[in-house]
Amino acid sequence: MTRTDINRENLLENVRRVVIKVGSAVLTTPEGIDPHAIERLAAQIAILSNRNMEVVLVSSGAVAAGRQRICERMKNCSREYNDMASRQAASAIGQGRLMHDYDEAFARYDKATAQVLLTRSGLKRRSRFLNARNTMERLLEWGAIPIVNENDTVSTRELEFGDNDTLGAMCLGLVGADLFVNLTSADGVYDRNPDTNPDAKPIPVIENIACMDIEAMCDGKTNVGTGGMYSKLRAARRAAQLGVPTLIVSGKGPFDLVAALEGTCGGGTLVLPECKTVSSKKFWLAYHDDPCGSILIDKGAARALLTNGKSLLPIGISDIRGCFDREALVFIKTLDGDELGVGMSNFSSSELEQMKGKRTDEIELIFGADIPDEAVHRDNMLLDAAI
Image 1: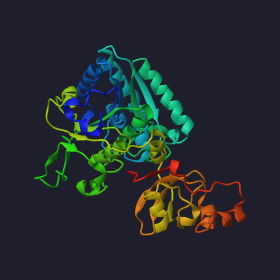
Image 2: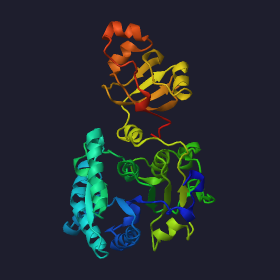
Image 3: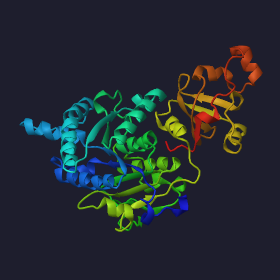
Image 4: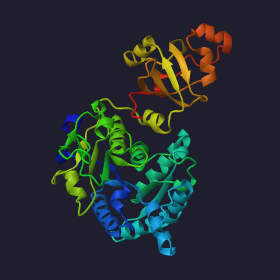
């Protein structure tokens, strides 16, 4: 099926594997986890599974479930406990309870579940990424429903993936999914923020998300790290680069996921994939970590990358920003600060400082001949990355 052939009516025709992400706004009430939401979700995923579709569920809700449990045991539960240690402790308490609820709900439909806790640092090494992929493949082969969440308890930074929209997008490359479904509290995407613009209009289909100014639509990146429509659109843009369509649709109330996928009910937004897609390896390379520095390049180098598909050579580098080691993920920018993409640097920032602007023969006099010619090889680079 080509990109132009994809629409809501035939969305499921060639889908073998789907990643469904559900957020806390769908699963929780002010009192904690909503058991009715868990039951509805399990019932509808079971229908997809019975149609021989493999489903990976990326679920929020562990922190809310933990807070609910804490409040049941403590007389005074007025504090929000929003510091990192408290959130991690609440997640540790709530993860088991959340999985218990899911396990019981899916068991009513004769479906086994599997808990998969991931960290971004755990997927940073390619070998670990591939090992996680093999485990997920075996779970799906056995007919289990993997339920994925970030391993909040051991994350060393407050924001590892940042939000489960980002985690959901990473799972697309991890399992080779054909479709990404993002269940949210909003009924799809609007042309402006409906919270501040009452006349905002819904967008049924986004044909080219790369051309959209999603920051302006969402009033900036104010919701990064906590969900929100910006993070959902950024995840959809990443999915589009991988060649995967995204359906952003409401999961609140008596929603019908199957009807939404088949296009027999209104609402929601379908984001079409890009015509030119990237490989799973490049996808992993660009999004497995946050860039930790920047390489600023001149106009000639920018033209070589953008027009001719070349690697980045040291002679085209004008400046280095930040401190990073070899094989670090870095931004590639113009001198004006325009982000061209990201890539894995073959050299550390201190080495690049000595190399910048120099020819290969000049560099060999300093470092010897047994080093790569490229600062960033084109195979380890993704231009127009959705960071």
